[in-house]
Length: 218
Image 1 (cartoon, rainbow, N blue to C red):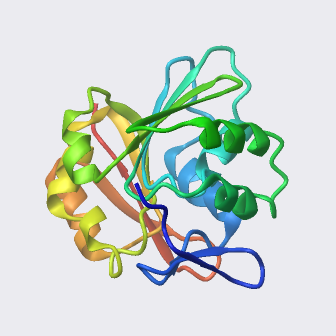
Image 2: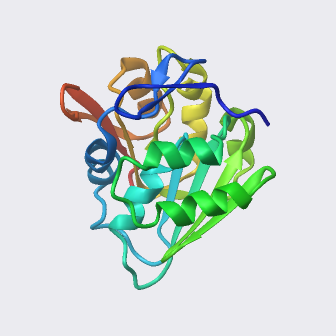
């Protein structure tokens, strides 16, 4: 599978040319605000807790999760990625952050191939499923306790935010499971509501006024 074509900003942020959108803007601080705090993490983490993600990208969200988990036990992390990044680009993107486990991630990513890439980190077993989430998420047998919805912006990458895919997110969420995403787009919130989530618009990170969190009732 082809790697995404990238350009790079002066501060070392990769930008996907196909979507004209950066992989991240606020870096680790934004990841912690949106995906960790937005899902009530790390407080909810426990042995066997399942995190699922749309859009693996640079692996930064996985790195942030690894920083706040020390066990006991093992977390499960499943990400769906249509455009897997080259290991050299991942290494370059993560180099700007203080991430002790980044070397382990990049080395395992470089050695992995095929439609399922497995990454073993201390206390975390991760699998990255390569392909269009609209096609492969319906066959996933898991149920997430927390979702990171981290595709490119809905206006630029609408296929990752459609009603059908949000319905699959709902179908693959455990009772009491949560969702967090940086976007506050109305159609995304309505799609989550339509499949049973209790949706909230909450303060976003930095200059982003709002973001979205959601919870599936017990």
